[in-house]
Structure formats: C-alpha cells, structure tokens
Image (cartoon, rainbow, N blue to C red):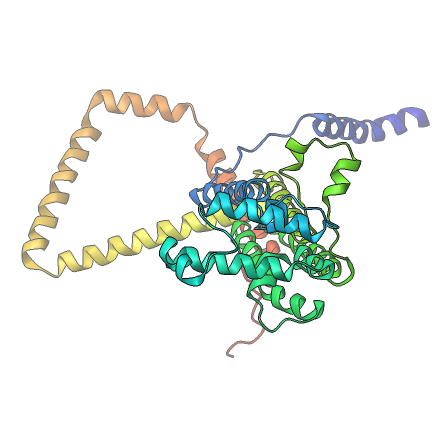
Length: 372
C-alpha cells in the first residue's frame, strides 16, 4: 500500500463530511412563520397614523391667528395702509362699525362678546403701529403679543411662549412613547428622543437669535404662486409651528414604518414554550384543586365516581373492539416509538440547555456539601 492510498483512505471521510456540511449550509434555512400581530400592535400602529395625520392636518389647515396676514400687510406697510385695511376688515366682520361710534352707540349695536372682540382688535392695531412691535408680533405669535401683560422685551415674550412650546413637545413625546411600548418598536425610542431634542434645540435657538422678519417676500422670490403661498407660513412663529408639526409627522411615519421584523428568535421561542408550559401546569393544578374539592363532598364524590366509572366502561369497550385493535396496530407500525422517545428526550434537553444559556432558567450547580 502506497502512502498516497493511506492519505486518501484517511482524508476521504473528512472530505465527505466537509462536502456534506457545505451542501447543507448552502440550502435555504427553514423559514419560521411570522409572529402574529397582537391587538396592542394594531392599536399603536393606529395611534401613530392618527398622530401623523393630525400633525400634517394642523400644519396646513390650522394656521395660527395673525392679523397682519388677515389684512395682507407687508412688514414695511405704512400706518395709513394699516388703518385703511383695518377699517375694511372691521366693516366686513362687524357691519355698521365705524371709528366715530360712541360707546353708547356701540353698546346698542353690538353684543357684549362683539364689543370685547372689537376692543381687543382696536388695541392690537394701535400696538402694531411701530415696526418693532410688528417684528415681535411675527416672531412670538398673536397669543403672546395680546395676552402677555407683563412682557416688555423679546426675552419676556420668549419666557411666555416657552411653557406652551415645551408642552407640545411633551405631549407628542408621550404619545410616541406609548406607541413604542411594544417590542416591535422599542428599539426606536433612542432615535426618537435624539430627533426631538434636536428639534427643541433648533427651535429655541431660532426664537433667541432669529428676527421677526416677514416671510412672505421669500415665497415671492422663490416664484411660489399666491394660491399656494396661502398654506405656507407668513411669520417666524408660523414657520416654527409648521416645521415642528411636520417634524412630528415625519417621526410618526418613520416610527410606523420601521417596525422590528416578525421573525421568531430562539429566545422568543423558548419564552413562548415556557409560557405555555406554565399555563398547562396552572391548568393541571386547577384540575387537582377541583378534584380535591369534589371528593370532599359526598354528593359530588358520588357524581365523580359515577362519571369515571362510565368512562372506564367506555374505554374497556373500545379496547375490546376488533376494529380498534387493528387500527391501533396499523398506526403504531408507522412510527418508531423508541426513536420518537429518544428524539423527544434530546429535544427537551436541548431546550433546557438553551434556556439556561439565555438566562431564562437559573443554572443548577451540583451541591458539594452533604451529610456524612
């Protein structure tokens, strides 16, 4: 026998094993069925879609109140134009109104809510006569400019709008947190928090360092038609609100789209097995308790014995039936019972080992101590 034959004789089984393993590795692995979506998964998906729709709806169809946009006034509009546009607006909104009406005539012509609104608008227009006031109005919005009675500087207005601004972020972040409470989207929470923090810092920096210039000329410069520009922001406050809402819309849509895969992992399978085993164990315990309670009562014990006596008679009748015996023998011949028992034992041991390695079961150590 030559050395070549010896080498081939030794190496051939090793090569065959490698080839078999390679072929098995090239075969497509068995796909596990996808994990079914629970009712909670559907609820959080619907919540994300509702949040996204509400944000984009508010961004384009619910602009903040802005009297300058209502009157179609430019940033450098002269005071006479402001007064003229204001008279036309008031005449259309409150028929019969003129600046020369006395307090008595106004009380006769208008209801108390209308009088309150008229007084508020007249005071607002008087405040907006200066360019500086108009810049503050465009930067911090209508509500802050009208309702803040102690605001003097831009810093005061910033402090006034800050709670409302942060509350919007807090509410949306809470909704997104609820929508990512399931395992399919928990991995997105860090990205959501980072994105929201970037939005907060950017918006706060804008309120501190951006002036309150009119944005309308920008749309005209870009060639955007007037019909389209109606849905676009006209001031920094409006722009910040719109981009905040669109940012929430983008985050909600991405969170809805990038959900975790539905493939079962080994850990998920083990947890499902243990959950079902615990359920079966609980049912067996309940059955034992029910049987103990039934045997403790004389009437129930009698019914219990009669029921199982009847079942035993039925089993005896089945076991003596020739057709049943023939069918049982045919069925058993199709299976290798010893092999099934061996495979079941191996599988159960593998499950316990994997569960222990995954930390789902505590490791059981051999006790070194003992009694002599």
